Image: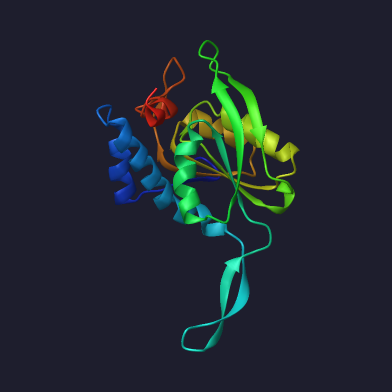
Length: 210
């Protein structure tokens, strides 16, 4: 059993994940389904969201205390470019969030991540940070991205993906044991080309139709 790992088992998410796995799913349907899954996964993702109580008055002229976002807005960090498929749906659920980007691409010969871009909000140490990338394969991109976030001061970090490989979960746990991982599926293994099996192919290419 992997540490710090939550695998969501929900029938609606499972149905939509099947649509994403199907190689016949067209780009337009893939995009909509990816965003749907992100919205559904927002509920377990934000279970630890910090709130504080505020006073309001209802339309019936009653005063009451209700929860509201606490302090600094949470930060959603997309690992480019596939992470943007998750980002679009999550922003719908928490529009107050700040957004950051870390650009990572895979070297197709070595399967190692190559960083090419980083843009983050200020005061990362004050924010709850949610890193999103549909695939957790070798773990290299997630590890390097989270390392960069910690260098910028981030302390409270959660990672969300759609599909994870056991090898990637183990590597991320080893590199960043303080980071919780939330996924919709833990797949069987990586193949010789370091792609997740059974997987769903290249999430970025399928989302953008490239």
